[in-house]
Length: 294
Image (cartoon, rainbow, N blue to C red; front, side, top):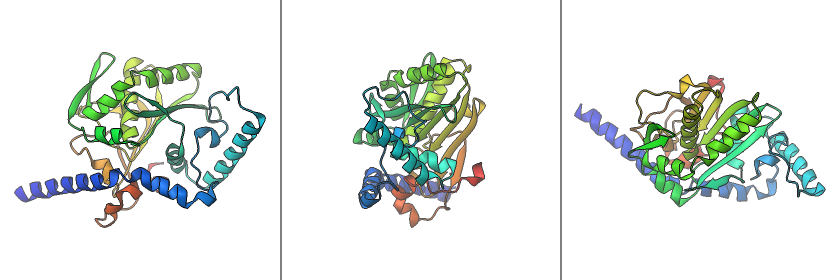
């Protein structure tokens, strides 16, 4: 029993140390890759959602010139061609990672609401940690209550602080978009820290609407554990729930005492040498095989 305890403790400290070394470099890896592929902008562009698919945008900017409109359409076609060989799950992550026009609110909560008229979906997505403030909040993982309307939910102090700082604005905007397209599917996506925000807003949506709005899809990548509640599960209220993690992405285990609803493992099995490159595995969910979870 003592040996098992020491082994478990050592593994947790290893994960925390690995994440600590890697977390500040995650965005640097993405930026470095962008610089390396600067001559291949079409193949690896850093673009906003409106450039990825012309149908996945709010109303066009009224001040947009004809040249800007045509450039937007051309860029959409280029990105569409590049992502054509990707699977649906790979493509989702690619778009989350490459979005560059997130709304930022409160304590650096990054989100974006979109309407996909082609697939008939209303989507909200949340970005990963992209600032020192985000990483500071990631480390505040002791239990803390967050009040979602009149319901108390237990998550980490850092996640509770970020979500409450937005003052329910993302939720209210999302509900407004959902009500504008009542026959569209309701879709929520998130990556890393954004996966926690995605799951909290999903639970808040269920509470706010008393379950009257059905969540058709909740998909998260580099999913972090965020629940201290032992019994509640989003599986009861979400038609398609996927919380993707890969063994060598130790960031997904950085809150080991919390729980997630549905662990969906992808990629290679854990390898102590490869796990040192946690930032690579955390930023390449657009390369993994998701066929197991189709």
